[in-house]
Structures are given as structure tokens and as C-alpha cells.
Image 1 (cartoon, one colour):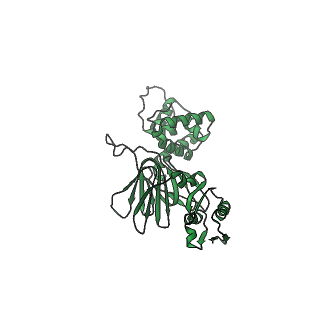
Image 2 (cartoon, rainbow, N blue to C red):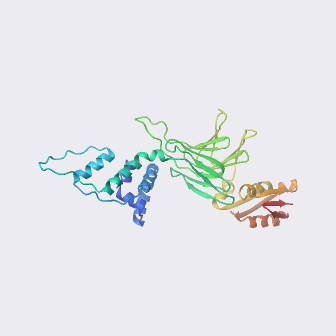
Image 3 (cartoon, rainbow, N blue to C red):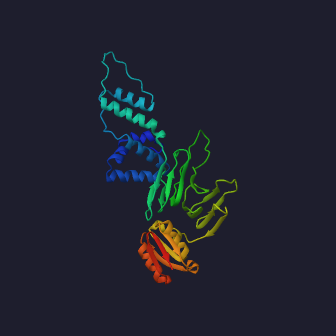
Length: 340
């Protein structure tokens, strides 16, 4: 059974771990799932090792030769001290190493040494009406809403940070910070979302960020969040669960309020829940999520309120319910919606 002190190379060379990654079976998968649940602080190491195994996916070749030969190869790779070898009076020719085995071992060593330099930024983009679930390098998850993009920072081993345009819901795992000697600078590494003019910092929590039209809104479902303006050294704004904070790039004022998170975050469950929602807010959903240009002909109509539950993506149904409930006429043409 793996030790809780296993390092990346320990997992990479563990036959049971390699089999789980390259040729998983039900019982092996169940074994590693239980192990990961019992050692949550090792999950990021598991993920690094898994990537490395996939990068060095070569057939295992048995190294022929004596036990001394195998021990020397292992020691060379992982800088272990060799046990003293008994002297022998027999004269041997140089050991023969199968070429495939040598190449395999060199690939493993090279991949392990170069792995930290392979971290590059990754970007994800969604189209209108599309959602995307993204697994981040530390095991945290992001659900990207339609018409949005998310970029993951390069230096994930030292700083957990992403850049968001649009909207995403984040489920962030706590990630233990590195220790140096006997001094530990922080118990956990911060997770930062850069959105518009705000930096949203958390340790481990569930929250939603929407950044559109020079305005950013953060909704906190669980945990603690701290908001900071990029251009100001002002005191950060702290949030508690159930709160929404909006920030406009124009007036640069934070607006905090308690909200019903189930209704506000219904999109991540594949539903739009409207609870006495003004028509102008529904028009923003049609524009931001589905790409329509919406024109409401009468100012009084903008304040009319609408209540319904509509499955995500069912624009036809939404328009039909709006017409019947609000007694309005809605015309769609060439990517535009006119309400009158």
C-alpha cells in the first residue's frame, strides 16, 4: 500500500498505479478512489504522477541481468545509495542492456526532470448556448457558462490563478502550501480569479463570478471570499455565504446584498429559474447566453416581472412563456428579438 509520504516518482514507478492509469480495471479503480479520498492532501501529487505516466506511456521491458544491475539503474534514476556489493573473483564481460529498456528508462528520467517546464497556460471558450466543465490542475472544478472564456495560469505549482471573461462557477479545493524547513508561510495556497477590474481570492469554496459589460458580480454559495480592486490599495471586501457583491468598472462602487443562491445559480444545474424577474434582466440572459440582440419597444415593459422555470437552451419555450405570461408580442428575425 502506498505511503502517505509518497512523492511523484514513487507513484510513477508503482506498478499498480501505472496499471490504474494505463489499463484500469474496476477493482483497481475502486482501490485508488478510496486511497485518494483517505489522502485528500495527496490529490495534486496523484494528478501530477498521472500526467507523467501518460507522457511516458511505453511498454514495460524486463531488464535482463543480475540484481546488482537492476539496483544500479534504479539508484542512477532516483539518486539512491547502493548497498555494498560482495566482491567476486570471477571476471565478467560488460553487462548487456536491451536497447528498449535503456530508452524507456531515459524517457522516464527525462520526463520527470522536464515536467515542471511543460506547464503552459490553457484557455477554454464556450459558444452561445454552450456550457463546459473544466477540471483544474489541483482537482478544483470550473463550470463555464455560455459566451465565456477561462485561461489557466502557467505557474500553477506556485500560484493558483485563472482569468475569466463571462461567467463561471468554481468549486475550489483547499491545497496545502509548500513547506520550507520548519517554517510554513501559509497553511493553504490562495486561489485567485482575475475578472475585469477585480481579483477574487479564496482558499477553498464554491462561488460564481460573472464579468460582462464592464461589471463584475460575485455570488458566494459556500466558504469565504475576498475581493480586491486591481488599481487600488483599498481594504478588500469580504463576503459570507449567501451574499452577492456587484462592482461596476465605471463608478467603482461595491454593492453587497443577500440573495437566493438557488435561483441566481440555477444555470449550473441546467435550468433558468425566474422569480418575479424584470423583463430587462431576462433580455440580458437572451443577449449574454444565447447571442440575441434584444430590443424592448416600451420602457414600461422593461419593468414587467416574469416567473417560470425554463430548461437551459430552450429559447423557444422561454419566448412562448414570456408572450403568454406578460401578454406581449415577440418577433424574432436575423438574430434579433423585438418585444412590444
